[in-house]
Image (tube, rainbow, N blue to C red; front, top):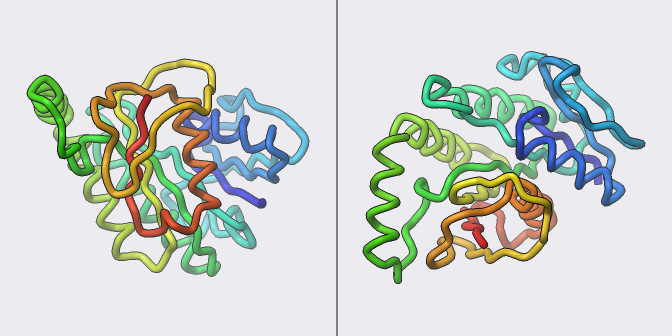
Length: 210
């Protein structure tokens, strides 16, 4: 496939680029600073642009089979960036007629597992309170997706770890795995690449966790 990756210098984004290249895809990595992308390989195009400008990134998405986004706040100070940048990506995609979009969000934005125990509910509440501005941003981002004309899927992981890719994790379309508390960034990327080719996840949130 021909893929465009936004947020390619982030932890999840770098993993998407690496794994996509390893799988033989053609990858356009959209970055503001190419020196921050340590990934190289045959089939990689590094596209330097200001992601907040839809006109600047139209060429990066034109003719692509799918767009994957690791965009999001890296700290509470960055709250608002996910909605603002995703809105620009959506505008560029709609202008170029590109439909498939997979983005990363977070578990607390989606539904709580029906069988969640008290410890999980308490943990979820504490995390949501501490990062309320970040999660409000992600909820707004998801609302923008729902209003768009794209074939979108949101992947919602729990707390992220730096671990090698395993490909062994649980997924729940429209929900979240019971007692799912962590997931490696590499496996988030693995899940995003998998759902990009899964039409049954269009218009859905997908919970992922070990």
